[in-house]
Amino acid sequence: MKEALKDLNICTDQPISVSCDNTSVINLSKNLVMHSRTKHIPIKYHFLHEQVAEQNIVLEYISTKEQIADIFTKPLPQEAFEHLCQKMGVISLSSLKFIHKYVAGQGEQFDRGSPYASLCH
Image (cartoon, rainbow, N blue to C red; front, side, top):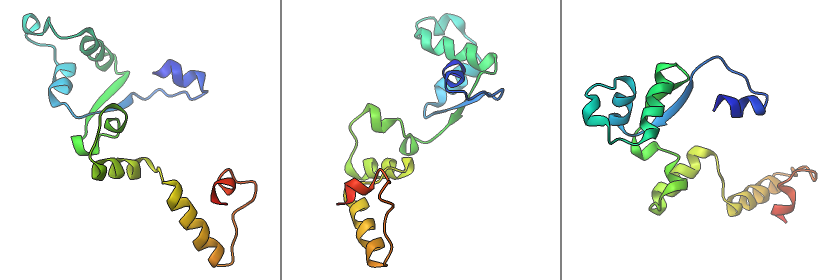
């Protein structure tokens, strides 16, 4: 992950925070005890354990309802979908048109060079 950030000219010495809604994975990443019982666990979890041990990442618990990644990985009820969209700062095109009408009603205008200007007409 840090290599990808370096490609974008973003350098950090701090561990990267990764949100996870699975407490078992977080516990396993911190302490790989009972190795004989964890042999069957996929390589990606062992990779996470190594990254946590090397302090490249920090796994932080987040509740399942707040897990933004779910919007990309599973079908969600409309209420959950809208909640996660709002957390990401995504706004619908119809909302943007409403905002434009409101701003225009106040005597203001969007900058014509704005990427949103063409969407509002």
